[in-house]
Image (cartoon, rainbow, N blue to C red):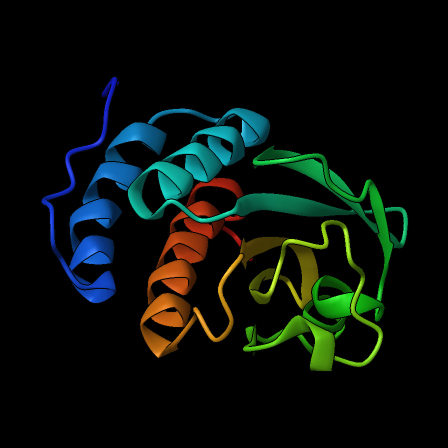
Length: 164
């Protein structure tokens, strides 16, 4: 397993995702433990991009429960349909929120979070988890992030839900 990421300096986000994706595949290859893979994925994303908060919420008993993450303390449980994570889980689609203060029902786990992107992992018609990324900057996420993070979710889905 790799001990560090290799991301060239001064790349656009699209180029950073292009460099990151094969490294994510390499680190996750052969590992069957979901928590280990989520933990390494969160660490790689935070290291590659310097995001304020990167983590996963797992769909457990009808709610989203905090999983592996990188960053400050986080909300432990989120109801389905509540906040950005809960909305993405129910809608089963990526949500980009340029200004979290403008999102109805936003759950402020940290007052420093200003924008957010949430990508659900859907398998067999059920949202299994969501990848949540927060930034301290307004309007910090774009379609480049959606495409890159969705590619990471596809890698996780292929490893952990291959039959779905």
